Length: 200
Length: 275
Image (cartoon, rainbow over all chains, first blue to last red; front, side):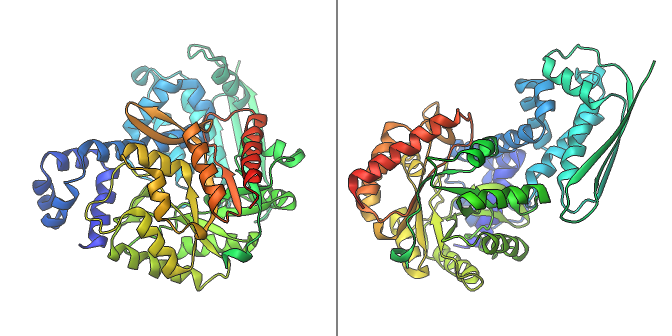
């Protein structure tokens, strides 16, 4: 039994839900389309489908939990159910990599949320700025970064208040905000400089 | 080698929400296990947290993504970062898993099971030899939970682990909760499993509580330890030369005092066996 190929096949099957479902329905067909050894595919096809699905689901759930930890205000603003549902949509089209995978995953998810139009997504109007703020915070934690710059249409303090309010309809006053995170030395702390100018 | 390892006692898997309690008053916690991956690409502030903790506690680094079971070999960059952390902490031992986490350029993001075969043993032995050549700190290996058993196994898990530690000289990190969960989900007797395991190689134990999802038990580390796991702990502490026991609570974090109660109970059970 070729362990390298079995592991490659399994890694794809547990991280790509569409591929997994296709495989469970037609293992030989998917194996041929992927260029896999059909005998080895047959070996993997003996794994009970519900067990393979359960493992695949657990991977998405884990990613979601970690993203919620990295984006606590965004999680609070969306609420658990909407955060999880939206993350699951995002996770189906993305993969994680690297040592800081969860930080990277959260930043990518935050960018997706930031790009969504409130009227289409039913997100609070200020969610894009909140997600952008938390993503910038995460980027600033990357020790390879010396500087992170962000402009927002709201004050971070007001965004945090809104998230904690539990009311997605709350109005957050417009306030042009310019934030810079700077790490002056490689082993030094990251400092935040912020300028907010309320709009009348 | 195992006989000369220090007895560390009963401790806790370090979780950030408990940082203040552990730094200000960690009485009742003998040592900490730290998730290595949290410190491999961390900002300086996070690494300073490690230094502060190390002033008070012995820290055991617990790796998640070395992927010792990867047939395509180790990721040299990750290996070197992990071993740099091991050198930094200078622990009496460090730990990883009998699992793989990546293959073919895909990062699974979690521990995946291996088939209990001779081929998988060879892969593990080779990868472990590679890291053993780069550090003199003893490595101990943890059993994982698995949603599915990899087809084509030639051995049962206990014999596989026994063969693995015999060939590598590693110790075992026996997660009794993982054992219990696998036993329930895959219908085998955990005590029969333990009877086949080389108990003299068990250096450390993990324990925690999980939750039920339909008929399936999940190793969510999200609940108090159930009676069945306490029984397995008691069984192990009576029979194995365990050097450390770690409570692994990850989710639904309770007040710190409740964790201290569980750790105290471990100490009490351990003391009753006078090992």
